[in-house]
Amino acid sequence: MDKMEILDRLETVIASRKGGDADKSYVAKLFKKGRQKIAQKVGEEGVECALAAVMGDRDEIISESADLLFHLMVLWADAGVSADDIFDELARREGVSGIEEKNARG
Image (tube, rainbow, N blue to C red; front, side):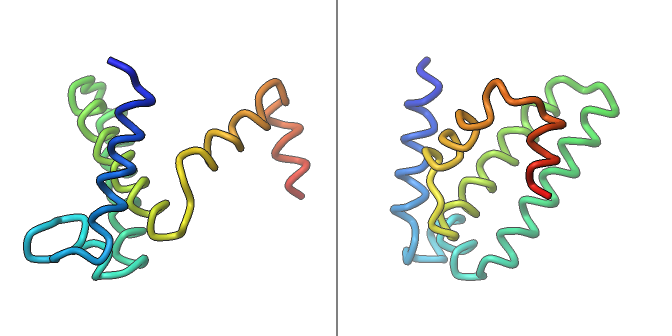
């Protein structure tokens, strides 16, 4: 299973749902509700993932992480951000101390 292929396919599917029929597509429904609702879903899934981690429930961590990544990718699409943009930023930070990077943000 090629991890990048999965993300690429998901990114393509999400983009294809923009402007789609909100009665037939959950993603189209999220886009129709707007960025605030999409961001709310990202927050909800993040909390659910964190709670699963605190409970030590591995299966729920996996499930909630998938939900979180999915909703985050919907948010990226809504904001005109691609997975490549995120990976480029991660690559830029590679080898940089987390403390140094955070301090550089000011």
